[in-house]
Image 1: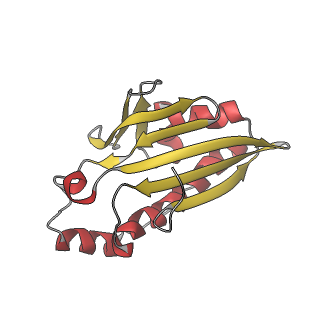
Image 2: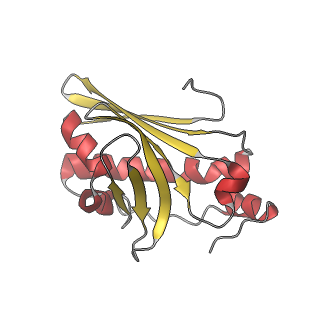
Length: 168
């Protein structure tokens, strides 16, 4: 999939190994630490289920594994389970590419969409991904995740409301 102007791409360098980064991206126990209580669960195979559970255990993200090449690449559908969201916005895809870069790992995260979306809708992910990836980096390098206080993404929520999509 070629990168488009709609895509959100982040590149970070982490003092770790490709194996540890891949494990952190796919482990429920590890993800709870850097992803602010959210737990990633997946079947490690193409076509396998991909889920992100909220801190209360409810299903927040529902998807499938599209590409699975540990410890180098993972692509999943990343669909928030709010009623009507996928039907109106289409699928979201998240790809992680992991490369050795000297004593560090270069992690490239790309969020892409099957449909063209308004910048206001994209603003939610663009607000959240830097905090999630920074916390992942901190946890892998220091053993401590970041404590980040973030406000709800008001621009995104207002844009979704205009489309008739409400947060449950």
